[in-house]
Amino acid sequence: MIEHKIIFTGSVGAGKTTAIQSISEIPPVRTDVLSSDLTIGKDMTTVGLDYGEISLGETERLRLYGTPGQERFAFMWRILAQGALGVVILVDHTRPDPLLDLALYLDHFKALIRETACVVVISKMVESHSPLLEDFSEFMRQKQMVCPVIQADVRDREQVLWILDLLLVQMETRQ
Amino acid sequence: MNAAAARTAPPRSSPKSIDDDLRAKAKSLLEQFVNQFGGVGVWGAVISTVDGFDVAMASMPEAEGTKLSAMASSISAIGDMAVQEVGTGKYHQCITIEGADGYIFILNISCSAGPMILSIAASKEAMLGKLMYYARQVVEKMTKA
Ligand SMILES: Nc1nc2c(ncn2[C@@H]2O[C@H](COP(=O)(O)OP(=O)(O)OP(=O)(O)O)[C@@H](O)[C@H]2O)c(=O)[nH]1
Ligand SMILES: [Mg+2]
Image (cartoon, rainbow over all chains, first blue to last red; front, side):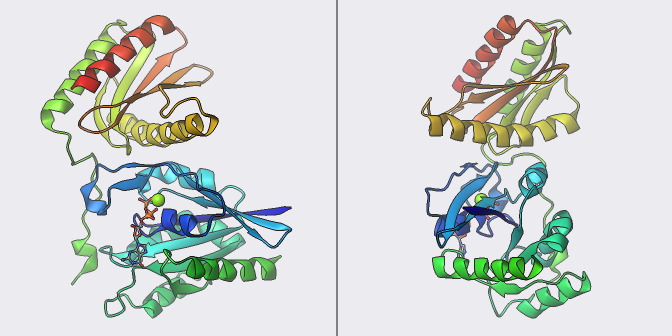
């Protein structure tokens, strides 16, 4: 069995825990606790990690790790990034400054993004609101980071599988 | 709309449910706790919300208490998971991390104002039996707070 480690990171509430929940074949390991921060707009938040698994055919398996979103847990980002072969950055479009959010994760994970595979996923996208999808792409170009930028609803298993496909294609071409 | 201007600074400490009275109570319990050791063995202690915001600290630089709060939150949540996966309970009662020069103890507090965590930094000189006895008293008093 060949195993690859993939991490899901990105802004608070963007859906990292949800994405892993949507596709994991095992009951995901979750470390969500009661949030005392009203500004994040939900009751529970990840403080440790999420963990799930999905197999690809008979010979390959992805180990899926979700990070906490909040920056005070950045030490967990460093721990979880170790040995990863791909990173999914989720950006919640409804937060006050999604481009600034994206910049934070691009910066923290830049080594991983340069050396491995990356997909940027805009979640909860309100298409009539800026920034538009092409603004995110342009932002990536300015940072000279090349990877797909898409919008998706991570509550939908099919869409999360599509994200993984985009990641796997890059992993194969880089090998 | 200028999105950058609308963005509020992330809260430094938890805004919800933890009123000043509770913070003051936590602070005084921690100070009593630390004083019991007369500067020998116990370096400092911090009480935090379960999502890693400091509520009160004693004998600890603010920056260190803030950082320890976030780390204790992660470690505590992972400890709870481990306890559940292995079937040794629902929540951990204490996690011990032993370094070359000292210890960190992390204890769960099921406070009615919301679950919290007590973290204690101690040196190798600490009398562990006494430390645990008083630490559990802090937990108990906070639980009733
Ligand atoms: N309306 C709407 N809700 C969504 C969409 N995608 C995800 N959600 C919801 O947004 C929430 C995301 O929460 P989590 O999965 O906990 O987010 P997270 O990224 O793990 O957050 P932290 O761990 O706190 O950083 C869930 O309640 C999802 O059901 C979407 O496209 N539209
Ligand atoms: Mg989460």
